[in-house]
Length: 109
Image (cartoon, one colour):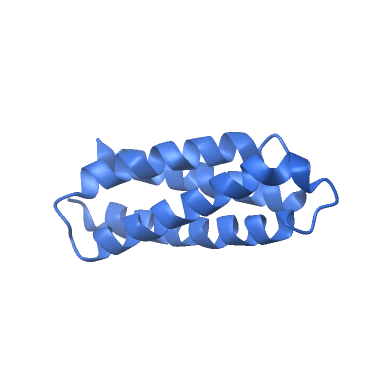
């Protein structure tokens, strides 16, 4: 595996964890919270998958391709959901998810 790609993916995963957690927390404060339930759920799931992916990459796990494929899928779903909302925190999260998805797809290949 390419060390540079691994480092980039770990950084993208950790940035995505942060963006997803911040987005979920901010969504809980939105007045139309019923509309945000799907966003919050995906934020939390995506954050967890990204955190696991980063940890497995850090330890050089042989499962990196599988977990990166899972992470890319979670990030794609979260980006699609967050991208539908006008809130700045959702837009920032969607962008972080897209970056993480791209980094993970490189390692999943």
